[in-house]
Length: 143
Ligand SMILES: C[C@H](O)[C@H](O)[C@H]1CNC2=NC(N)=NC(=O)C2=N1
Image (cartoon, rainbow, N blue to C red; front, side, top):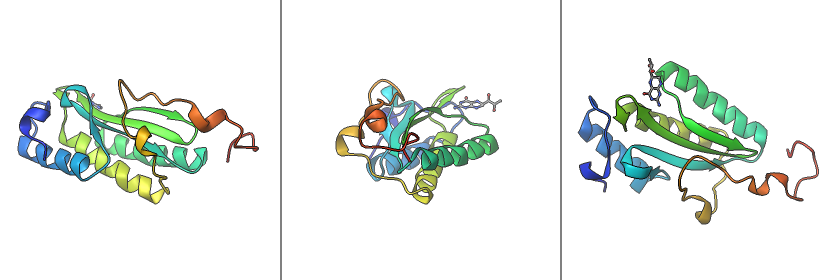
């Protein structure tokens, strides 16, 4: 259970709603709080680059509807997504909404579960090239 003091909440937000939603996403979900509790982030992995891109496209369409953009990175079949509100700075209902949207969209696109060691991220949405350029794929586009 997260408390009010774990989060930096964007001014003008319903604080109880944010604490409740963030608790659900972190304690009962796969998201991590970013530094200072200003946002939520987590890595996603899919079977192919094509599936990853399709997922990111769905997220991008919802971003347009919500007028809210992510901080994200993509390498091959992985994407790392962070939701935080820049103005007013902190976590807002748009961030918790988008995190939930990502969970649902990822399921639709056949999310693969990252290994435990890969679920913790430090310092930003940067994904190591990792398995994208190894010897496991023979097709040039990897899938
Ligand atoms: C006018 C427009 O709604 C604002 O600039 C929005 C756009 N998207 C945004 N996205 C994020 N993540 N934070 C913001 O503060 C933000 N502001």
